[in-house]
Amino acid sequence: MGIMLLGFMAVGLAIVYRVMRDAPPPTIAAEVVIPPGADVVSALSVDGTIQVTYRAGGAILLSVFDAGTGELRQTSEIAVR
Image (cartoon, rainbow, N blue to C red; front, side, top):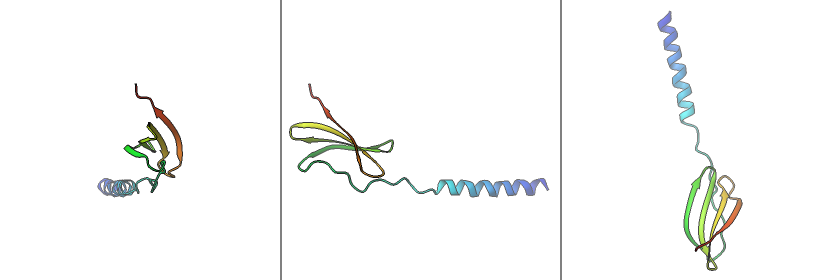
């Protein structure tokens, strides 16, 4: 009886493991919008955001976008000294 109970527990754990392992990856925005003519320096996907560093009009800018929707959250100019 005890061995059969252990067998059911093992099957149950295997099913839970497979369901959790095969979960779909999070969605990522298909595109983000930066100013026309800007030169992209780098792009990263970090903690639910897409961070794009680019040169535009003589300035270096960092824009942070929501990774799921592609919506702009924040833009900051990077000062070069």
